[in-house]
Length: 395
Image (cartoon, rainbow, N blue to C red; front, side):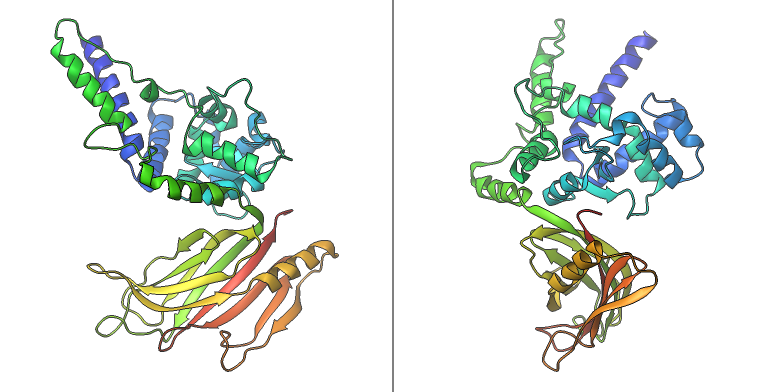
């Protein structure tokens, strides 16, 4: 009797987890998966974890250990050797070209983290370890991959790469999972339960009220879906790291002050900083990273005042031409390495321009960077201080 209750409880948890897969916000789902992996490793000795992973001293050592596993030495999506990016919460290690496509899907689908450029937390390493590596990821997300389907290779076109990644992760067309087969466990002694089970299954898949599966689109959403497809086909030429340092003398948008944050846009990508409360001179010291699409658009920065009960107020905007920085990075890439700090070029500020002060592009310890003080436009006053770093695709 106790075994029966235990089995029923386990089935109930499985159904709950399947439903949560669709109802969670991406961040909540990501945190929940990380917590599950950590709990399993501590209490159950889950087979997904290699026990030696938890014995290593810190997150970086554990991450390095995971990268040395055989299946993780090749991109999970195209097979390129030595992948240096991870797509969470899937737990796939991918190459830089595939990382660009993952990033274009949006953080609500795939959160892309660099193995070398980002600082990993124990939670993120737990998530990667708990996924079981590329072998287990592909076992799940390519389980129903048709025999005649050509999986992309390292030299595939951007369109082929984008189509495959969208089908694999966003649409999950090749997934095998109980939540997609929707078995009906009909109790022959209580036929009335059959209707309830069918109703629960419909809700779980998003076909019925009150929940809708986020993967299903209304006919009116086709335009948005087409736009997302087009975004995924963009070719990326590198990465740009944007250090948002501080704002100075920003405009007042509340009674006496403002609650500012910065929104970044590069092509179809958007990211934003945290909100700093009640200040006109905020210090963010926050780093954001974006893929550089081709052709290269300007980097757009917008400052907003966060409001609780109404739409956020604009506090100015400005555009930055990143072409000179990219040109300097390409030139440095083809030249001999230079130690220390070397000035490459200087952009002069003018009275009616967006530069508040002269901007210098320099090579610092092998990294091509640009320090910029920006004068916000379409606002009474205000400046932003940022630093840019360009990472070419080959790096």
